[in-house]
Amino acid sequence: MVAQERLATFRLAVALLTLALFAALVPCVGAGRAQGAFGLLAVLAIEPFVFGPKRVGGWDERDRAIHLRSLQISSTLVALLATAALWITYYAHQQAGTISVALLPWAAWSGWIVFLLLQSMSVLVLYRRS
Image 1: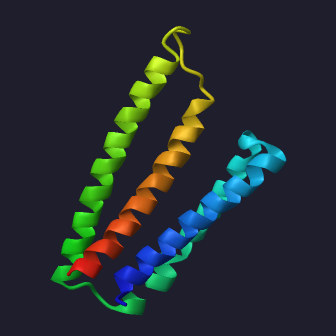
Image 2: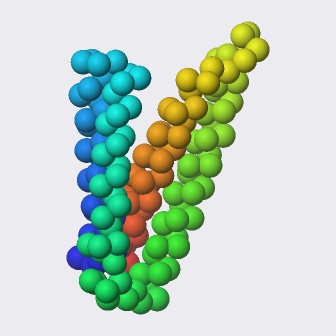
């Protein structure tokens, strides 16, 4: 397993652990307070120290191509999901004429988690295919 696969596995594990913790906290403390589980994403700050170029070496052309392709895939899918979420929100709140500000943190957290999951999974799939 190359360094980029280990990094993707680490990101995937952190994102899934965050979602599992969030899902476990929702019944206990409610959805608003369960957002504190997203603080677990701060663990991603140790990436440069564990998976940095000094620790694992540089990337070759294949690694860079896979990384760029995974960014392209995940960015495109997040943009599509964001567009769908905006239209769903528009039609759900069309009668009220306004959209609740309480939806903004949910959009930010869900967007970041979805991006992490998609990017990590696409890296792993692209490495398995090549």
